[in-house]
Image (cartoon, chains in turn brown, purple):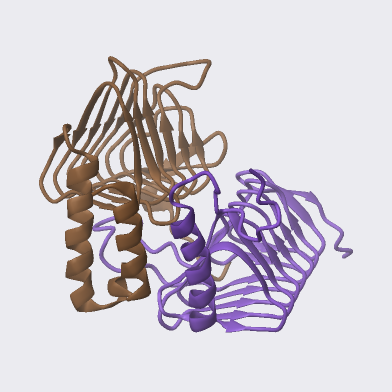
Length: 194
Length: 193
Protein backbone atom coordinates (compact mmCIF):
# COMPACT_ATOMS: atom_id res chain seq x y z
CA UNK A 1 0.00 0.00 0.00
CA UNK A 2 1.82 3.10 -1.18
CA UNK A 3 1.30 6.45 0.47
CA UNK A 4 -1.08 8.00 -2.09
CA UNK A 5 -3.28 4.88 -2.15
CA UNK A 6 -3.26 4.86 1.62
CA UNK A 7 -4.16 8.54 1.80
CA UNK A 8 -7.05 8.08 -0.65
CA UNK A 9 -8.31 4.98 1.19
CA UNK A 10 -8.32 6.68 4.58
CA UNK A 11 -10.07 9.77 3.17
CA UNK A 12 -12.76 7.62 1.59
CA UNK A 13 -13.16 5.71 4.85
CA UNK A 14 -13.48 8.96 6.75
CA UNK A 15 -16.03 10.36 4.33
CA UNK A 16 -18.14 7.20 4.65
CA UNK A 17 -17.64 7.41 8.45
CA UNK A 18 -16.66 3.75 8.41
CA UNK A 19 -15.06 3.86 11.85
CA UNK A 20 -18.33 4.93 13.50
CA UNK A 21 -20.28 1.93 12.14
CA UNK A 22 -20.13 -1.57 13.62
CA UNK A 23 -19.76 -3.26 10.23
CA UNK A 24 -17.28 -0.63 9.09
CA UNK A 25 -15.12 -1.43 12.08
CA UNK A 26 -14.17 -4.76 10.55
CA UNK A 27 -13.37 -3.13 7.21
CA UNK A 28 -11.20 -0.52 8.95
CA UNK A 29 -9.48 -3.17 11.01
CA UNK A 30 -8.67 -5.11 7.83
CA UNK A 31 -7.23 -1.94 6.25
CA UNK A 32 -5.20 -1.16 9.40
CA UNK A 33 -3.76 -4.68 9.58
CA UNK A 34 -2.86 -4.62 5.88
CA UNK A 35 -1.23 -1.22 6.30
CA UNK A 36 0.79 -2.60 9.25
CA UNK A 37 1.93 -5.56 7.17
CA UNK A 38 3.12 -3.19 4.49
CA UNK A 39 4.76 -0.49 6.60
CA UNK A 40 6.45 -2.96 8.99
CA UNK A 41 7.52 -5.45 6.32
CA UNK A 42 10.99 -6.90 6.84
CA UNK A 43 10.96 -6.53 10.63
CA UNK A 44 10.25 -9.04 13.33
CA UNK A 45 6.52 -8.38 13.71
CA UNK A 46 3.87 -10.44 15.50
CA UNK A 47 0.33 -11.30 14.37
CA UNK A 48 -2.58 -8.86 14.26
CA UNK A 49 -0.53 -5.65 14.41
CA UNK A 50 -2.55 -2.66 13.21
CA UNK A 51 -1.51 0.78 12.04
CA UNK A 52 -4.02 3.63 11.64
CA UNK A 53 -2.72 6.42 9.47
CA UNK A 54 0.94 6.95 8.67
CA UNK A 55 3.76 5.47 10.74
CA UNK A 56 7.18 7.11 10.37
CA UNK A 57 9.91 4.51 10.58
CA UNK A 58 13.64 5.12 10.56
CA UNK A 59 14.98 1.73 11.54
CA UNK A 60 18.66 1.01 11.01
CA UNK A 61 18.97 -1.31 14.01
CA UNK A 62 16.76 -4.06 15.34
CA UNK A 63 13.02 -3.64 15.66
CA UNK A 64 10.81 -6.22 17.27
CA UNK A 65 7.03 -5.75 17.54
CA UNK A 66 4.82 -8.18 19.48
CA UNK A 67 1.36 -9.54 18.67
CA UNK A 68 -1.68 -7.26 18.37
CA UNK A 69 0.27 -4.05 18.91
CA UNK A 70 -1.61 -1.04 17.56
CA UNK A 71 -0.40 2.33 16.36
CA UNK A 72 -2.80 5.23 15.95
CA UNK A 73 -1.38 7.89 13.67
CA UNK A 74 -4.52 9.52 12.36
CA UNK A 75 -3.98 13.06 13.69
CA UNK A 76 -0.19 13.18 13.58
CA UNK A 77 2.03 10.23 12.73
CA UNK A 78 3.78 8.04 15.29
CA UNK A 79 7.54 7.81 14.79
CA UNK A 80 9.89 4.96 15.61
CA UNK A 81 13.61 5.64 15.24
CA UNK A 82 16.24 2.95 15.80
CA UNK A 83 19.89 3.92 15.25
CA UNK A 84 22.49 1.47 13.90
CA UNK A 85 23.42 -1.15 16.50
CA UNK A 86 20.46 -0.20 18.70
CA UNK A 87 17.38 -2.25 19.41
CA UNK A 88 13.75 -1.48 20.10
CA UNK A 89 11.33 -4.12 21.29
CA UNK A 90 7.63 -3.61 21.84
CA UNK A 91 5.61 -6.17 23.83
CA UNK A 92 2.25 -7.73 22.93
CA UNK A 93 -0.94 -5.66 22.92
CA UNK A 94 0.76 -2.33 23.49
CA UNK A 95 -1.12 0.70 22.17
CA UNK A 96 0.43 3.87 20.76
CA UNK A 97 -1.68 6.96 20.34
CA UNK A 98 -0.87 9.61 17.73
CA UNK A 99 2.31 11.68 17.79
CA UNK A 100 4.26 9.25 19.97
CA UNK A 101 8.00 9.34 19.33
CA UNK A 102 10.26 6.48 20.35
CA UNK A 103 13.97 6.79 19.67
CA UNK A 104 16.52 4.09 20.47
CA UNK A 105 20.23 4.73 20.18
CA UNK A 106 21.14 1.91 22.58
CA UNK A 107 18.23 -0.18 23.74
CA UNK A 108 14.60 0.55 24.48
CA UNK A 109 12.39 -2.28 25.61
CA UNK A 110 8.67 -1.83 26.13
CA UNK A 111 6.66 -4.46 27.99
CA UNK A 112 3.29 -5.99 27.25
CA UNK A 113 -0.06 -4.17 27.37
CA UNK A 114 1.56 -0.74 27.69
CA UNK A 115 -0.38 2.36 26.70
CA UNK A 116 1.24 5.44 25.21
CA UNK A 117 -0.79 8.63 25.20
CA UNK A 118 -0.55 11.17 22.43
CA UNK A 119 2.76 13.06 22.07
CA UNK A 120 4.55 10.82 24.57
CA UNK A 121 8.28 10.72 24.00
CA UNK A 122 10.71 7.94 24.87
CA UNK A 123 14.37 8.57 24.00
CA UNK A 124 17.48 6.92 25.42
CA UNK A 125 19.81 9.77 24.47
CA UNK A 126 19.16 13.43 25.17
CA UNK A 127 22.45 15.03 24.15
CA UNK A 128 23.87 14.91 27.69
CA UNK A 129 23.23 11.47 29.04
CA UNK A 130 22.39 8.17 27.48
CA UNK A 131 21.30 4.81 28.86
CA UNK A 132 18.94 2.00 27.98
CA UNK A 133 15.27 2.41 28.84
CA UNK A 134 13.25 -0.50 30.21
CA UNK A 135 9.50 -0.13 30.50
CA UNK A 136 7.68 -2.96 32.31
CA UNK A 137 4.30 -4.52 31.56
CA UNK A 138 0.98 -2.66 31.92
CA UNK A 139 2.59 0.76 32.05
CA UNK A 140 0.47 3.75 31.10
CA UNK A 141 2.39 6.73 29.81
CA UNK A 142 -0.11 9.56 29.48
CA UNK A 143 -0.28 12.47 27.06
CA UNK A 144 2.91 14.46 26.54
CA UNK A 145 5.05 12.61 29.10
CA UNK A 146 8.78 12.45 28.40
CA UNK A 147 10.87 9.44 29.47
CA UNK A 148 14.54 10.28 29.76
CA UNK A 149 17.64 8.13 29.23
CA UNK A 150 18.55 5.29 31.59
CA UNK A 151 15.09 5.13 33.18
CA UNK A 152 13.49 1.87 34.28
CA UNK A 153 9.75 1.92 34.82
CA UNK A 154 8.26 -0.88 36.93
CA UNK A 155 5.21 -2.89 35.88
CA UNK A 156 1.76 -1.43 36.36
CA UNK A 157 2.97 2.14 36.87
CA UNK A 158 1.32 5.27 35.53
CA UNK A 159 3.25 8.24 34.22
CA UNK A 160 0.96 11.25 34.53
CA UNK A 161 0.31 13.56 31.62
CA UNK A 162 3.02 16.12 30.94
CA UNK A 163 5.58 14.65 33.36
CA UNK A 164 9.28 14.48 32.67
CA UNK A 165 10.77 11.27 34.07
CA UNK A 166 14.50 11.36 34.82
CA UNK A 167 14.77 8.71 37.55
CA UNK A 168 13.59 5.13 37.92
CA UNK A 169 9.93 4.55 38.74
CA UNK A 170 9.10 1.60 41.04
CA UNK A 171 6.32 -0.85 40.10
CA UNK A 172 2.67 0.02 40.88
CA UNK A 173 3.37 3.70 41.37
CA UNK A 174 2.52 7.00 39.80
CA UNK A 175 5.07 9.49 38.57
CA UNK A 176 4.06 13.09 38.03
CA UNK A 177 5.54 16.54 37.62
CA UNK A 178 8.69 17.99 36.15
CA UNK A 179 11.02 16.47 37.30
CA UNK A 180 8.76 13.54 38.13
CA UNK A 181 8.16 12.48 41.71
CA UNK A 182 6.68 9.10 42.47
CA UNK A 183 3.86 8.09 44.75
CA UNK A 184 2.03 4.87 45.39
CA UNK A 185 -0.77 4.18 42.95
CA UNK A 186 -3.06 2.87 45.71
CA UNK A 187 -2.79 6.13 47.65
CA UNK A 188 -3.97 8.16 44.72
CA UNK A 189 -7.66 8.56 45.39
CA UNK A 190 -8.89 12.09 45.30
CA UNK A 191 -12.29 13.61 45.79
CA UNK A 192 -13.38 14.66 42.29
CA UNK A 193 -15.17 17.67 43.81
CA UNK A 194 -11.84 19.12 45.02
CA UNK B 1 6.99 28.48 -6.05
CA UNK B 2 4.96 30.62 -3.70
CA UNK B 3 1.40 29.90 -2.78
CA UNK B 4 1.10 32.64 -0.20
CA UNK B 5 -2.35 33.54 -1.35
CA UNK B 6 -3.67 30.07 -0.68
CA UNK B 7 -5.64 29.89 2.51
CA UNK B 8 -4.70 26.27 3.23
CA UNK B 9 -1.02 26.26 4.15
CA UNK B 10 -1.20 22.53 4.84
CA UNK B 11 -1.24 22.20 1.08
CA UNK B 12 2.35 21.81 -0.09
CA UNK B 13 2.59 22.77 -3.73
CA UNK B 14 5.72 20.67 -4.28
CA UNK B 15 4.13 17.49 -3.00
CA UNK B 16 2.51 15.11 -5.47
CA UNK B 17 -0.11 14.69 -2.77
CA UNK B 18 -1.13 18.34 -3.09
CA UNK B 19 -4.53 17.44 -4.49
CA UNK B 20 -5.16 15.02 -1.65
CA UNK B 21 -4.14 17.64 0.92
CA UNK B 22 -6.40 20.15 -0.76
CA UNK B 23 -9.20 17.58 -0.72
CA UNK B 24 -8.50 17.03 2.96
CA UNK B 25 -8.82 20.74 3.69
CA UNK B 26 -12.12 20.77 1.82
CA UNK B 27 -13.44 17.64 3.55
CA UNK B 28 -12.58 19.16 6.94
CA UNK B 29 -14.72 22.16 5.98
CA UNK B 30 -17.55 19.85 4.98
CA UNK B 31 -17.09 17.71 8.09
CA UNK B 32 -17.12 20.76 10.34
CA UNK B 33 -20.32 22.06 8.82
CA UNK B 34 -21.93 18.62 9.03
CA UNK B 35 -20.91 17.77 12.56
CA UNK B 36 -20.78 21.05 14.47
CA UNK B 37 -23.16 23.90 15.21
CA UNK B 38 -21.36 26.89 13.77
CA UNK B 39 -21.84 30.55 14.60
CA UNK B 40 -21.36 33.38 12.15
CA UNK B 41 -18.07 34.39 10.51
CA UNK B 42 -16.20 31.31 11.75
CA UNK B 43 -12.73 31.21 10.19
CA UNK B 44 -11.49 27.70 9.45
CA UNK B 45 -8.03 26.98 8.13
CA UNK B 46 -6.18 23.73 7.55
CA UNK B 47 -7.25 20.44 9.01
CA UNK B 48 -9.92 20.10 11.68
CA UNK B 49 -11.00 16.64 12.87
CA UNK B 50 -14.36 16.33 14.56
CA UNK B 51 -14.88 12.81 15.86
CA UNK B 52 -16.90 10.84 18.38
CA UNK B 53 -20.49 11.76 17.49
CA UNK B 54 -21.12 14.21 20.35
CA UNK B 55 -22.22 17.85 20.25
CA UNK B 56 -19.81 20.53 19.15
CA UNK B 57 -20.95 24.15 19.32
CA UNK B 58 -18.73 26.87 17.92
CA UNK B 59 -19.60 30.52 18.53
CA UNK B 60 -19.35 33.62 16.33
CA UNK B 61 -16.00 34.91 15.03
CA UNK B 62 -14.08 31.82 16.15
CA UNK B 63 -10.77 31.22 14.39
CA UNK B 64 -9.65 27.59 14.02
CA UNK B 65 -6.16 27.49 12.55
CA UNK B 66 -5.19 23.89 11.85
CA UNK B 67 -2.62 24.65 9.16
CA UNK B 68 0.43 23.80 11.20
CA UNK B 69 -0.97 20.68 12.83
CA UNK B 70 -4.52 19.33 12.84
CA UNK B 71 -7.02 20.43 15.47
CA UNK B 72 -8.91 17.60 17.12
CA UNK B 73 -12.38 18.11 18.61
CA UNK B 74 -13.50 14.81 20.07
CA UNK B 75 -16.93 14.76 21.74
CA UNK B 76 -18.25 11.34 22.65
CA UNK B 77 -22.00 10.63 22.53
CA UNK B 78 -23.58 12.67 25.34
CA UNK B 79 -20.55 14.92 25.50
CA UNK B 80 -20.58 18.59 24.54
CA UNK B 81 -17.82 20.96 23.51
CA UNK B 82 -18.84 24.62 23.64
CA UNK B 83 -16.46 27.16 22.16
CA UNK B 84 -17.45 30.75 22.87
CA UNK B 85 -17.39 33.77 20.58
CA UNK B 86 -14.08 35.16 19.35
CA UNK B 87 -11.99 32.21 20.57
CA UNK B 88 -8.73 31.53 18.73
CA UNK B 89 -7.65 27.89 18.49
CA UNK B 90 -4.13 27.24 17.20
CA UNK B 91 -2.70 24.14 15.52
CA UNK B 92 -2.39 20.82 17.34
CA UNK B 93 -4.99 21.70 19.95
CA UNK B 94 -7.05 18.77 21.10
CA UNK B 95 -10.30 19.00 23.06
CA UNK B 96 -11.90 15.80 24.28
CA UNK B 97 -15.27 15.69 26.02
CA UNK B 98 -17.23 12.85 27.52
CA UNK B 99 -19.48 15.20 29.52
CA UNK B 100 -18.79 18.90 28.96
CA UNK B 101 -15.95 21.22 28.01
CA UNK B 102 -16.64 24.95 27.85
CA UNK B 103 -14.30 27.57 26.49
CA UNK B 104 -15.27 31.16 27.29
CA UNK B 105 -15.42 34.12 24.91
CA UNK B 106 -12.21 35.63 23.46
CA UNK B 107 -9.99 32.92 25.02
CA UNK B 108 -6.84 31.83 23.18
CA UNK B 109 -5.92 28.13 23.04
CA UNK B 110 -2.29 28.05 21.94
CA UNK B 111 -0.49 25.34 19.99
CA UNK B 112 -0.70 21.69 21.10
CA UNK B 113 -2.61 22.41 24.29
CA UNK B 114 -5.01 19.68 25.35
CA UNK B 115 -8.27 19.95 27.24
CA UNK B 116 -10.03 16.81 28.45
CA UNK B 117 -12.80 16.09 30.93
CA UNK B 118 -12.12 12.39 31.42
CA UNK B 119 -8.99 10.29 31.72
CA UNK B 120 -10.65 7.60 29.52
CA UNK B 121 -8.78 4.71 31.22
CA UNK B 122 -8.92 3.47 34.82
CA UNK B 123 -5.68 3.88 36.79
CA UNK B 124 -5.31 0.19 37.59
CA UNK B 125 -6.70 -3.16 36.46
CA UNK B 126 -7.70 -3.64 32.83
CA UNK B 127 -7.15 -0.16 31.47
CA UNK B 128 -9.23 -0.79 28.37
CA UNK B 129 -12.37 -1.69 30.35
CA UNK B 130 -14.54 1.21 31.47
CA UNK B 131 -13.67 4.84 32.09
CA UNK B 132 -13.52 6.83 35.34
CA UNK B 133 -16.31 9.40 36.00
CA UNK B 134 -16.13 12.61 33.99
CA UNK B 135 -15.52 15.99 35.53
CA UNK B 136 -16.48 18.94 33.32
CA UNK B 137 -13.85 21.50 32.38
CA UNK B 138 -14.80 25.15 32.26
CA UNK B 139 -12.40 27.73 30.87
CA UNK B 140 -13.56 31.28 31.51
CA UNK B 141 -13.61 34.20 29.12
CA UNK B 142 -10.47 36.15 28.14
CA UNK B 143 -8.21 33.29 29.27
CA UNK B 144 -4.90 32.35 27.70
CA UNK B 145 -4.02 28.66 27.64
CA UNK B 146 -0.35 28.30 26.76
CA UNK B 147 1.61 26.16 24.36
CA UNK B 148 1.38 22.44 25.28
CA UNK B 149 -0.64 23.22 28.41
CA UNK B 150 -2.86 20.45 29.74
CA UNK B 151 -6.23 21.05 31.35
CA UNK B 152 -7.23 17.78 33.01
CA UNK B 153 -10.69 16.73 34.33
CA UNK B 154 -11.93 19.16 36.97
CA UNK B 155 -9.81 22.04 35.73
CA UNK B 156 -11.59 25.41 35.98
CA UNK B 157 -9.98 28.60 34.79
CA UNK B 158 -11.49 31.79 36.14
CA UNK B 159 -12.08 34.69 33.71
CA UNK B 160 -8.86 36.31 32.56
CA UNK B 161 -6.59 33.59 33.96
CA UNK B 162 -3.36 32.73 32.16
CA UNK B 163 -2.08 29.17 32.04
CA UNK B 164 1.57 29.24 31.00
CA UNK B 165 3.21 26.81 28.59
CA UNK B 166 3.29 23.11 29.56
CA UNK B 167 1.31 23.65 32.76
CA UNK B 168 -0.80 20.74 34.00
CA UNK B 169 -4.02 21.87 35.68
CA UNK B 170 -6.69 19.73 37.31
CA UNK B 171 -8.14 22.17 39.87
CA UNK B 172 -9.73 25.60 40.13
CA UNK B 173 -7.64 28.58 39.11
CA UNK B 174 -8.87 31.96 40.45
CA UNK B 175 -9.82 34.75 38.01
CA UNK B 176 -6.97 36.78 36.47
CA UNK B 177 -4.32 34.52 38.04
CA UNK B 178 -1.18 33.31 36.33
CA UNK B 179 -0.31 29.66 36.79
CA UNK B 180 2.63 27.67 35.45
CA UNK B 181 4.75 24.58 35.92
CA UNK B 182 4.16 20.92 36.67
CA UNK B 183 3.07 20.43 39.43
CA UNK B 184 1.44 23.86 38.93
CA UNK B 185 2.43 26.92 40.95
CA UNK B 186 0.31 30.03 41.25
CA UNK B 187 2.69 32.75 40.07
CA UNK B 188 0.39 35.69 40.42
CA UNK B 189 -2.90 35.91 42.18
CA UNK B 190 -4.88 39.11 41.75
CA UNK B 191 -7.77 37.96 43.87
CA UNK B 192 -8.25 40.28 46.85
CA UNK B 193 -9.52 38.67 50.00
